[in-house]
Image 1: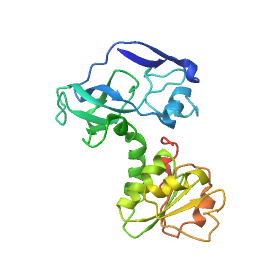
Image 2: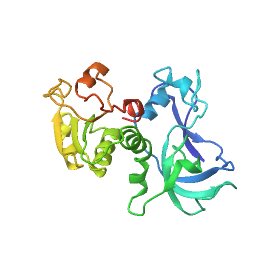
Image 3: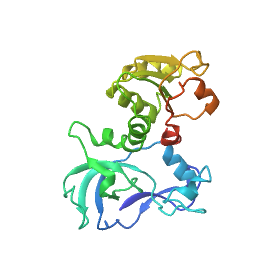
Image 4: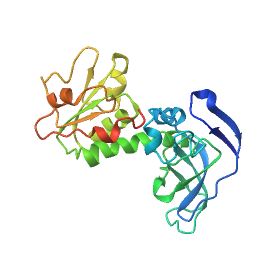
Length: 246
């Protein structure tokens, strides 16, 4: 099969489009015929191996070269085959999710890394959801424990994770303030933010206002700055989303 492969870390020049063996699913894995693959900031980190610490914590990477040579994580496609222990998918069904090596004609993924693709979504639309959407869901619902009526501040609301975080918080009934650059304010408002703030004009961490939950996807503000915008029992689910696909 054809795949985008890298044998070393670096810029785009390390990527090669070449033939490799088609993967074979293990007992708990699904073989997906890839129809679309999402691209986000995390793929740049994998390609470059930077920051260096990522090589020690991401299973697909090694200290000197990638352990999984095929780039890509987000995937959407049709199930081609399933391992003997798989119960949620059958060949021919459509799914989306995340795995290692989605920039290829075929990819294998653990069954629990995939979900059935909604019929209303195209493969291209589904392929941009998994990593960033899951990070936002974890931050807002699981770690932030956002409740209806709470005030939520999303920093970097026009980025991939922030874009989803605004919508998840709104779906949970929160009052959402989205922070973005001047050119992105209309976009953030169009996805449901109750209020949009231009960070080039207003410092939301000056202590003048507070929010029960702050989702910071950019990581450009210090903990001391963020604490000024949080009440004593406020939540800051930063560890979930920082660096998770921008």
